[in-house]
Image 1: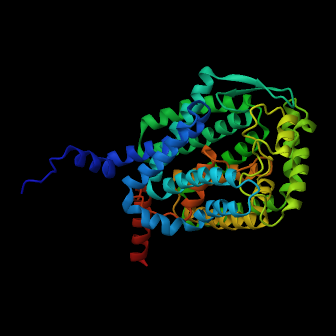
Image 2 (image 1 turned 45 degrees about the vertical axis):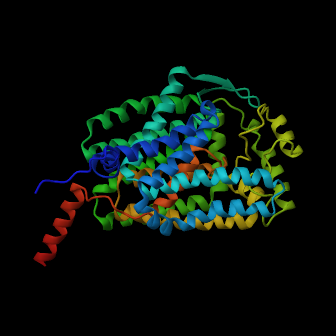
Image 3 (image 1 turned 90 degrees about the vertical axis):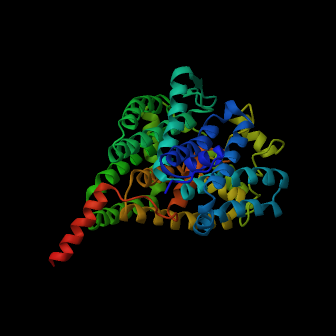
Length: 436
């Protein structure tokens, strides 16, 4: 019988976007677009908000059949932006909380949809392409910048700061390694070449950015990433043993972070010729502690402190030479959340984050793949930087999207086809069971 095909061209094209090879290309573009928009935010301006929102709407529309499952699985993650928006009720600046809370919700939604509605292999490729464009553009036309506090001259590329430049380069290194593994798995020579070319550019940008947090976190994440990639071919029992050992080490490191991480941080920055006493974080943290003591339980309201006209914020901007009076924070994730959302918000964030991260690590142990391994490595990098940077609460920020994509991936449905290695392992177990 002759196959019936719709005579409406739009229907044919739409089917191509929803199935087969066309769906993988579409998923990669849908993942790349919001990351690209956030990375190039300083150039795109308000257009970046439209691109992130538009990509989220387009993802939901093209993958509408996955939305019910996505919402059912990702609801714990959604509680975080919901609580941030709810803080409008007690915010010192309700207008700022409502405005930035909506932007934060859109940013989180982008990460949630990325993890639940798109093929995670395509997500890995799309995110790498977006970061590759950013790093390469910075390498070709970027510039250096003298820090107003420390006086150091660092390479920032086209980023707004050396910390953003260094962090983007570190993430690019992780993406390159993960995509090399994926290229080997799917036999893609083009992807392998792209990842190999990107690696030295990312390493150069990371080194020249003089960002101690990116160097420390990136180095640790690379080690963990390589261990996870190497363990892919091991039996599940061996992976479980490695997971237990790594988990004990990570928990011990987190429990003692305040003892060893400042020493490592100081060693890195003094080793690069900088003065550790001029970082300014001690003064920032002291001010944050004063604000936390004023409203400890629910905080001042989401994004209610860093607003123009707030005398305390204006004084900090002036002290740290932040002339545009935007894009600054307390350089500590816990203190940033405590100021905005209080102890209730911090407990909510930590509880959901730990459960989601545990689920992601467990799923990666049971069925490892380059995308999950990258996001595990990203969370190692993310965790180590929380002591010195504000992570996971910025609006229209690429790293915020990656954070909530990683956390959501712990709950996301596993619908990737079996790899050749997995099929071989299943056949081997079946044959062993028959013999016994």
